[in-house]
Each structure stands twice: as C-alpha cells, then as structure tokens.
Length: 491
Image (cartoon, rainbow, N blue to C red):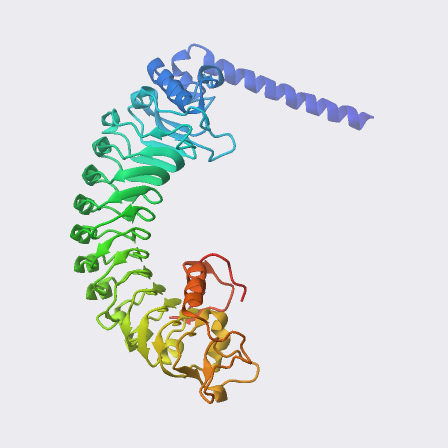
C-alpha cells in the first residue's frame, strides 16, 4: 500500500511540474510580447492574400468548403494540405498550391463544377501550381486553361503541372510564354488539343517539358530548340506531325527525349548526334524514313535507344556501334532494315536487350552476340532472312531461355549435335540435319509472320527487373532485364 501511495505521489508531482512549466511558458510568450507571436503561433497574413487563397480553392473544390472556418491560419497552426507558404517582409504569402488526391486529406476537386477563378492569379508569390485528377469529364464539365492573367506570375512561378485531367480541354494558351522563371511545365495525360504554341520557346529557364498523353497536332516549333537548359523533353502519345526540328541539336543538356507514338516523318537529322548527354532516346511508332543517321554513333551517353516501328529502311553499317558502350536497351524492330548484322554490334558490353526482329536482315548470325555480350538477357532476331547455322554455345540457351527469338528465318538451322538432350532448342528453328522443321518435337514450330508480329507487339516494349542471373562487367554485377509489352511471360 505504501508503495502504491508513493507511486501516486510521484506521478502527481510530475503532472504538477508539467502544468507549472507549461503555464510559465505561456506567460513568458504572452506577457508584453504580442508583437512577437509569430515565433510560437500565428504569423501575420494580409487579409487580401488569405481571402484570395480561400476563394481560389473554393473554385476548384466547391462552395461548401469554408476555408475561413476550417483554416483560420492557413500558413500557421491550421495548415491546408497541399498549400505551402513563405515569409516576405514579415508576412506570410502562398508559395505552393497543389490540388488533387495526392494524400488522404488532400484538397479534392468538385466533380460537378471545378473551375478557375481570378482569385488564383492574385497569389503573386506563387512558385508551384499543380492539378492532379481534378477535371474529370470533357463532356459534363469541360475546363480550359485560362488565356489571361498568367503575366501575374512572370516573376514567381517555377513549376506548373496538370496531370491526369481528362476534362481539361482546348489548347495551351500563348500567354504561358509570360512565365519567364518557369523550370517545369508538365501537361501529362489530359484532354488538351491544338498546336503547340511557339511561345513555349521563350521559357528559357525550363528544365522539364512534358506534354505527353494529349491530342496535340501539327509540327514541333523550331523555337523549342532554344530551350538549352532542358533536361527532359517528352511529347509522346500525341498526334504531332512534320519533321524533327534541326534546332533540337542545340539541346545539348538533354537527358531524355521521348517523341514516341506520334506521326513524325522525314529523316533523322544529323544534328541529333550533338545530344551527347542524352541517356534515353525514344522515337518509336512514328513515320520516320531515310535510314539511320551516322551521328547516332556519337551519342555516347545513351542507355536506351528505341526507333522501332518506323519505315526507316537502310542498313546497320553506317553507325559506329562500338562507341555506344553505355547502351543497355536497343530496339530497332519493324524498321525495314536490310543487310547483315555488323560485328561491331557485339562490342556493346552493357547491352541487355537487342531487338532486330521483323526486318529484312540477311546473312549469318555472329556467335559474338552470345559470347561477347556478357549482359545480354533478351535477343530477338525473328522475322528476318537470316541464314546459316546457329553457333551459340549451349550455356547461352540455358541462360536466355524464351527470351531468344529466331523463328521465321526459313534458312536458319541449329546444330543438334551441340545440344544436350535436356537443353531447349531454339523455338521455331529446324535442325541442320533435317530438311523440315521439327514440328514433332516443337508444336507449331513455324510461326506465321502475322503471329510473330502479334507476339512481338504484345510482349516487347518496356523493361522490368528480372530475377535471373546477372553479368559481371569491370568487377561489378549487372542484373538483366526482361522486356515485356503487356502480359508478363513466366520463364
């Protein structure tokens, strides 16, 4: 009993001590120091700024949202999720507004009437503005990016993003060109249409320009070649046409260039070889022609090159493939390529994926594609006119398995005497000792051209980690990737 009483007494003393310390703290912070309340609670915010913030948010989330009651101190002790503030001359000003379901308690747009109001453009210290999944329907409640008032953000806005807004329609306003300090412009997967405004070329501070997944059409303005600080340029999945601007050769800081899934035409400009810092080049699914430019061999930082599904034609001999020592992913399928596979392609030591399928390539297959490429984990040569004997060692077939495609090369055969009874023979390839395909051992061994095309289109496009064996290069382990395009194939 005595022990219990002592414990209760100790707890009471501790509680009284906390109450005393807390009271002393409040006394010290309030006595005669009302002007210093910013240090513990509310920093002053001008009424005009606060009301502009409330009204701007109401325009997007609906009039039922009462900011003055819910968040009387939006930059202090009642912060709004998605809103950030900075101090200027002793006052709080809004520096970031992020609308959309990024977090559980984020501001969410009204499904019936989300809209822009002029109050948003009264936040003249705004640096970041983003909308995610905010404008839902292009039919029931279509919303356009305002044409006016962007000049209010000329000296402040650094990042403007619209992501996943199917109800955001219309063209990009030319007044976007006023945003001289903008470093990131992301208009990704919306319902935007029209031509790309040349005024974007005035945004010389841009480092990221992403306009993918919309319905833009027309040519890419040559003025975009003046965005020399760009690191990422992504115009994929639109309806852009015309030729690649020669001015793109000025984008020497660029790390990623993705123009895939458009209707671009003409030849690859020689100037593209000036992009020596580029690591990702994706020009797939366009109408490019005129052969591969030799300057591709000068892009020594490339890790991924995709030019597949273009009627480019020509051969592979004009490029110094041995210079591309950082290249890991190379897809040149469905391009109408002719001639032989150059031996220099066996010198790209980091290459994991090589797709040369569905072309008109001929000649023998170099054994170096197996023995000289320590990291190769996916090799597709199917749908060509390759001939002769496959002289790959048995360990290569065990390593690469179903990720080795050589079917639909009628004059190609494998050497059965080099294979053990338990090893898998290359799919769709006859034995050199037989006159016909081994259809009794491999059902449906001869795949039609259409079947091969369907298989390729549904299984070969993006890299995913493969839990297989890696390759050792310069003392480091490099892990292979499998390329899939839809359904993942269990190996």
